[in-house]
Image (cartoon, rainbow, N blue to C red; front, side):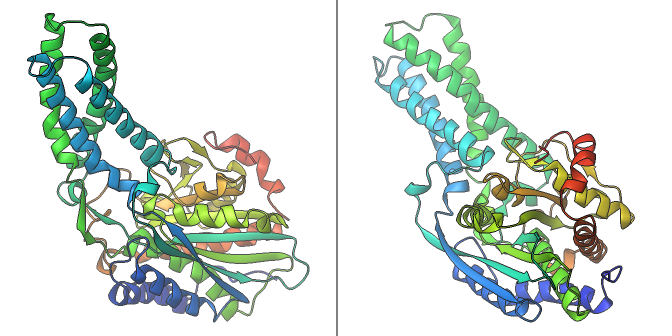
Length: 432
């Protein structure tokens, strides 16, 4: 017996109406807020209609750390420039300001690399602790459990990105490029400066004047990055990422309403919390349940921002290229897409991550697909990410792809059937 090809109109309507309901009734779902947890409780109640078991798990995190270091780094960059000029003009002599500037600039650079690019915890302990929540729903097979497929998204929403709203990439690129490039340049300069000052050098060469002028030019970028996040606005997050939540839920809804179960494959929906705080929800779940999920072969298919059909792509690595996902799982997604009429490409390297990387970090097989433009549109992480700005076509197609992926994974008897093709087709992930 097979799943019915394509989702029903009732499920399609449910997803769109459900996203609107959550946006209207659970506003400001920032990571670690009561609104996020209440939304997760509501969604868990919905999942109970179609699942054999629904688990809600709270976890602690420091959500401010992932982006909270950014304005601090901007201020550090400005202060470093001031410190250099105070030394260059001999207002303050010696190496004290050089040492202080270098230490703090290198710490800011470490935050950029570890927190923002690698999605790892670094300065989290310096920020307030809050509680977030993961929701996991399971639909058991008819017979013996031999394998498991999980579909997932995240329920939390982001703080608004100021420059995404005001100009998209035209604003984001110079602000991010100038500030990140500036931080790297000042880090290199400060190391040279502190070594030179400790050797008792004097600032007579034109090099120091030119370097100081270049640093002054960087100050506007450091000022601009301080306003990168609008901490007063939490977006609705209709596309990012309630679309993925309701697609994952839609899989279980379709199976239940067709009274369908696979013979040996458990189908699950994971609605993670606090992805916008640096994948903290998926990481917490994978870390806690690594052994549980290893009882049988388990694969995880993550989704994020299912908004643009022409941008549907497969994500074989993430965390700015520092975390590889499974090429074999990517092949499951690819073949499902082809069977649904779309051939998805492997995405190029991009500065970001999806929840798949939280699982891959702990050696679990995961990959994902998204429908977001890497040339960010003005709805991305802004107040324009509303239910009125969704693509029903993309949501419905993505659900069909998930249903087909579950069918393929069960029919072919597990992930081994996809390894060889995945290794040939995809280059950026690994073939575990």
